[in-house]
Structure formats: C-alpha cells, structure tokens
Image (cartoon, rainbow, N blue to C red; front, top):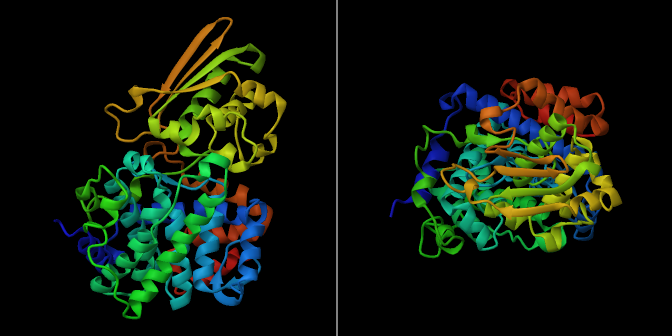
Length: 456
C-alpha cells in the first residue's frame, strides 16, 4: 500500500504559490478564463439552465449569498454557486480536457475554488494555488482509475475524480491540515458519482453531475473544516475509489512525479463545443474539405476511425446518427462530422442545425469504426482516422492529436478571443475587463474584486 490518499492530502496542504512554476500558473489562468467563457454563455443559452434555476427556487436554495455565479445578476451561497458554475461551465461541452485521464478538470475545480475563495476573502494568489492543487488531484486520480476501464464500468470521470479535485481546491483555501484534507477526501469517496447513462437519450445529467461534483467538494472540505471524520484511505482502501470504480486501476499514477511533473501542463482546450473524441476527426474533415475543395454532393462515403472510448461516447450509429438534442449532438460523431464537412467550421451556434435535412443526409454517409491504430503506442486516445470517398477516389488522413493539446496549445490572444466570443453577448464590455482580471489574478488582494466583474 502506497498511502495515496495521505500523499495527495499532504501535497495539497504543503503546496505554496511561490513553489509553482510560472508556466504552470500562467496555464492555470488561461484555463480558468477558458472555462468562464462557457459558464457565462451557458447562463443565457443552455437549455438546461431554466430547470436548474427552478429547482433551486422550489427548494428555497436560491437565497442571496456572497458568491459569484458568472453571467448571473445576483450572488449566491457558496455551495450553490459552485453547483451552478460547474453545471453551466460544462453545459456547452466547450471546456478543457486532460487527455490521459479523459476528464474536464476546470469544471469541478474552478467553481469550488472561486466559491470558497470569495467565502474566506482569499487573494488571487491563493485561488490560483488552490486551482492548481485541484487540477493535480483530479487529473492524477483520473489517470489512476484508467479511463478506458472507468468508462467501461459506466462512470463519468469528471464527476467522480472531479469531486476529489474540487475538495482539494476548497480545502486548500480553508487552510486545512493534511489530516483534515484526507478526511475531506474520505467524504469525497462517498460523493463521487456520475453515470454515462445520459448518452442514451441526450440527457442533462452530465451537466448537473459535474456541478454536483464542484458543490460536493465544497461540502466535503467544509465538513472536514468542522472536525467531521471522513473515511480513511478513500483512494486506495479495500472499498476505495480505485477498487470500486475501475477494473484496471494504476495506483502509482496518482502520485507519480507529484510536485515535479505538473498534470496541469497536459490539459488541452477545445476548438469545438463537442465531445473531445470528435475533435481530431473534425480537424481532419475541415482540412480535407479545404484541400480537395469538397462539397457535400461529391461525398459518397465517410469512414471515421476512433479509439474504443470514442465509439462508446460518440459512435453508436443506432442512437447517435440523427441526434435531436444538443447533448445528443455534442456526443455524435455523425452530426459534428457532417456539420464540419458541410460548412468547413463548427461552433456553438451550429446546434441550430439539429434536424436539418441536409445534415441528416450527409450523416447517413458516415460510418464510425474502432481503429486499433489509435490504441497502440499512443499516450492518449483522442486521435482519429478519416477516410472520404468521392467519385474521384478516396482521401485518407490520420490525426494522432486534436488541435488544442499541449503541443498545439493556442496562444494567449487566441484564448482571449475564444472567451470574448462567448462572453461578450452576455457581459458586453465587462467581458474585456473580466478577461484582463483573470489573466492577472495574482495581483488581486481579494479575489472578489476580480470575480464581481463576471456578474451581469
């Protein structure tokens, strides 16, 4: 037994702002900004948002507090703010991904960090430190769970490992001891939940369960702060996370290189608002369309080869070929691929084309198959092979990585523009002010001075 729970708890307790490499802090700020763009736009546009708000009102959970919900007009209590920011930020499926663990780190971690940061009057430096701590914990636990095995068991890692990441961020801002943080992780083990069953009917569970992970992390850390005794060895114990949630766990990956190798630097960002497993194929389709001057009427057949995880999430023809909901579209290689091939681009507003006869007809020409070449000798499973057949022959490309991974991470200007495209329709000129504040978060003595710019 390597005592992974205690090791991770000690890491979170001991982490200091000045010990984090500058490039890691810079990446954390850019990732935070990227996430907030989705949060702000989803407050207005996501079709699941009204249901969330009505639920909070019905249960009298909509009382005023001191915590920001980005893109909203009022302030909320910390736990509810974490829930809403997490659910909203994950609603567009435009938020970041950590390829090795196949999870979205910012969605549970950033909301927990801001909620508790505002609660305790933390500085921007403190919040950035907590965000990095949360990223490291959830990504490492995602690695240890083994995403292929975790998916095969029907779990959503952003909601399971993400609960631990949210607890780590919240605990860091509360200034908990390593023993208290281990106790918070013990509570997280009872909260870690998230089912892939939403894939069957395009349900909104995926958004809610990630928001719940953010909220549950805040609750777990608050319990530990108040001397609640959580279970020990929550990660590695005989009934712990790695036993109950995976058939092929790798406990060593939870702590390998801890404090030296930053998983934060392995987080990629999305150029398209859909499941990450669709992105390499979309990149290839757009490039091939441009290179060969392809038009939909020329297409006879399109074959997309994906890793088996991608098949599980996006490639089931029986349920994915003609989606009727946004979630269904976000997890359809057929729909997203047809959009990309039809118009040479893909963005949030293109979900207006759900049910479009031309897109459905093009999607009928797509086959999605498992390609073993995307499983052997690769560090992560997000690649794709694309084969397009026309009357003139067959064109084929293999993209090992989608754009936006660490090797092709967009520059600061591109990241800021993505944020502004999403946020300006909601915040107008305040979007530019918020972007500047997040990208210089370390200069704020109180994080609320920055976050209040995100209120509509």
